[in-house]
Amino acid sequence: MNLPGKIAIMGGGSWATALAKILLSTQDGLHWYMRRPEQINDFQRLGHNPSYLTGIRFDTGRIRFYTDINRAVDESDTLVFATPSPFLKQHLGKVDTPLHDKFIVSAIKGIVPDENMLISDYFAEYYNVPLSHIAVIGGPCHAEEIALERLSYITLGCVDVEKVKPIAAVFGNPYLKNTVSPDVTGIEYASVLKNVYSIVAGICHGMKYGDNFQAVFLSNAIQEMRRFVKAVGKVPQDITDSVYLGDLLVTAYSRFSRNRIFGTMIGKGYSVKIAQLEMEMIAEGYYGAKCIREINERHRVSMPILDALYEILYERKSPTPIIQQLTQTFK
Image (cartoon, rainbow, N blue to C red; front, side, top):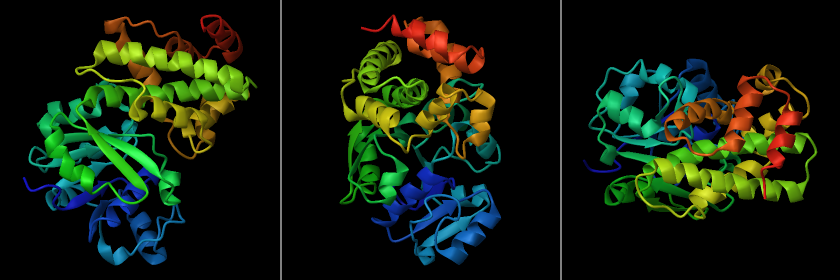
């Protein structure tokens, strides 16, 4: 396999658009799969994604668009998946082209619902992709700041760090730095948990808890993340690395964080259903809370923050007494 070969972006949202901008800064051309033909038509007419990060201008002559996912897969070597995790099975359900000889890059910060599987494990088990041919992207890195070319950092996790280095090279430019890591499992679980904790940070913000409390909350959140990642991880990791702690901090504090926005609405009194309807994009932490809760039934790690959010989101309990009770466990 001559990596990266022809690269395809799989998805049409904000993160997919930011990744396309990065790749076109290092590559001559790009394949790009989007589900809706009208989105592609508008993209080609306007010169930018009509729905997400509309300020990024593209030379569409360097992009080959696809609405047929099998053609996109067949004509590409490296597939960069950037779809919301709840929709991954739906997209892959249309794929009948073999994936085992492709290199998969997952930019999905979630778990496959119902299966309760990490994205890397899902590709390995159901599509026979060797784990050495799968990489995952971890933050801290908001799509909106990539659009503004603000200095950002990512980590690419792969069990074969030598194989992922040529992939990492195409994700590096003057405003995006990267590193590689063998900790695929830890990076993926941390990416899910930071969304979970960011919803709670938003709830607390909506309830008018201040900066002092948020600092204490995040100190406890990173300890909870460390306990869980240590229990499920396959290689040692330093939880203070930017791919863990940094991603948590930016998602919990940033005005661009959809999970924080979602949580803030709930903290202000919106019902979960109304908050979801008001959101223009998916808050991955909503699905992640349920998946991690079910996964943790096997591991039995102490996760009071996760448990509190589950009660608010899925048992429809009032945030006020749940958060007040949670605060009593912090130190």
